Length: 360
Image (cartoon, rainbow, N blue to C red):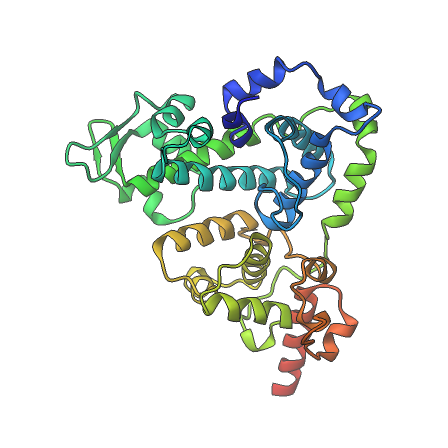
C-alpha cells in the first residue's frame, strides 16, 4: 500500500485503497489471528483520547508497516464509535487533524530531500488544496505575502475556530475573497481534515464487528478516566498544583520539549483550571509563534465554554507514563496528599479547599 495513504488515511485515494484491499473489516476484526491493524487502531484511539495525537507511541518500540497503519484508520473509526466516552468523536477527529497538520506542514517545509522514500510519503500544498476542492478558491497574493481564499470557503472552515482574528470583521475582504497568512492557510487545512474525519461519526457498527471488538472497547474505556471533577474551578493557583503538573510546568518553562502525552497532560490540566490564553502560554513556557499556535489549538480542542471537555490523565495513567514524581524510583517526591487521591484535579481541588480554609 502507498506510504502516503498510511500517513494521510483521510485522503479519498486512501479510502479507495482500503476498499480495494484483499481483506475486509470483518476479516480484520474477527480473523483467527489478530490483524496488527486492530492493535494499531486501539493505540490510535487511545493516543487520541489520552495524548491528543494519533502518532505511534515512540516509546513502545513497535513499527507498523504501511498496510497496518492504513487499515488501522477504519478500525479506529469503529472503535471511537463504540467507546462510551463523552466527546470521544470530537477529540479523536481533532487528534487526527493535529497529527496530519504536523505532518503536512513538515512536508511543505521539506518537500524533497533527494530520497525516493521521502518523496513517496510527502504531500504538497497543491495536492492538499485539490483534495478539499480548494484549488480554485485559494490563490497566493501577487505580493507573495499570503493568500486569498473565497469568502464562502473561509466561513466554512473558520466557523469553529476560536479567536476574534478569525471573524470576518477582522479580515481584509475584497472581490469575494479574504486575505490570510500562510500559517492561517495551514490552520484552515487542519480544520478541513478535522471536519472530514468527524463526518459520519459515530458510525453504525454491525453486530459481528461490535462483538469482535468487545475486549478492545473495554480496554479503551478502562484507559479513559471519567472523573467527577467540579466544573467551576475558577482559581488559578500554581502553588496548589500537584507534583506531576508542577514538574511538567517546570520542565516546559526550562525549554524541554515535552512528549505528546506530557504536553497533553499539562495543557488539559491548565485548561481544566481555567487558565486563560496568556496564562496558559506563560505556564507552558511558550516562546515562539509556532509553539503558541500548537498549544492554543490543543487547548481549544480539550476544553469548551463549560470547562474541560476531557479531564487530564489520571494518576494511574501518569504513573504508567512515568510522569509521576511521587513514584519516581530514583528521586521520589514526598507528598502526603497524593496518597489519598487518584486524579491530579482531585489533588488541586483539595489543595484549593485547604488553602481557602487557612485564609479564613
